[in-house]
Amino acid sequence: MRLTRDQVLAGALGLLDEVGIDGLSMRRLASVLGVQNGATYWHFPSKQALLEAMAEAMLADLTLGLDERLPWYERISELAQRLRSALLAHRDGARIFSGVFVPLPNALAYGETMIGLLRGAGRSSRDAAWAVDTITYYVVGHTIEEQLAAGLPDGGRDAVARLTDALDPAHHPNMLAALDDIPVPHTEDHFAYGLGVIIAGLRSA
Image 1 (tube, rainbow, N blue to C red):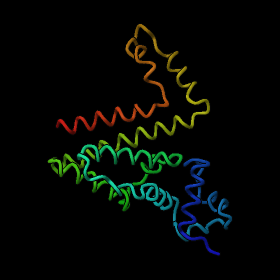
Image 2: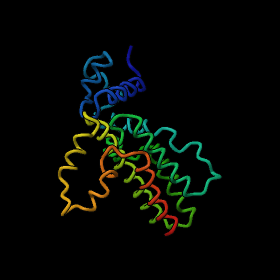
Image 3: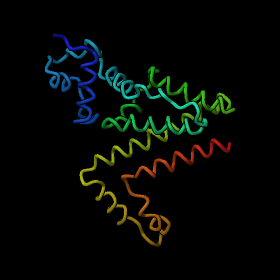
Image 4: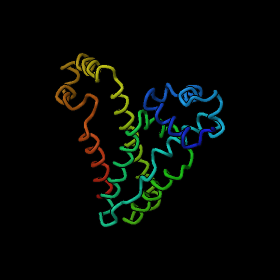
């Protein structure tokens, strides 16, 4: 029986969680699904087409159920946090999303909602669009770092040790003073702080 598109997509997301984006290939996916190599191309003509569908699936329902009673800036913050959670739900999810440059319906819904909230708050169309880019770049960049740190074999201890050894009190006194708050993996509070800075800037602009 021929696999459905949804079965191929679910298999690809499962394989992504197992091997990451660097280990994901159409040949490997076909093997996992138990079909001949090339069978997956019936639904996805290329790996890029598959990655686009995976990114779209990650963003499903991202904008649904947003509480319209909340102030615009709280809804902006909520959507940014939802985007982060969606990308964190799958291994290398942020890298998948950042490599897709097509107008996916779920991504368009996210952009439309975010820009609409900012325009409704009195921002110009340009300022609204650029502010959404700023927020999205922050979310994606932060999440990529989180996921890369999560993949370190020793939980990041070696990276922390290397950073500590590289700091010279004569040349890096400020970094040494802040050392406990620099190393990865960053906490939830780290993400919330950065997002809060951006939102505060938008509120005061």
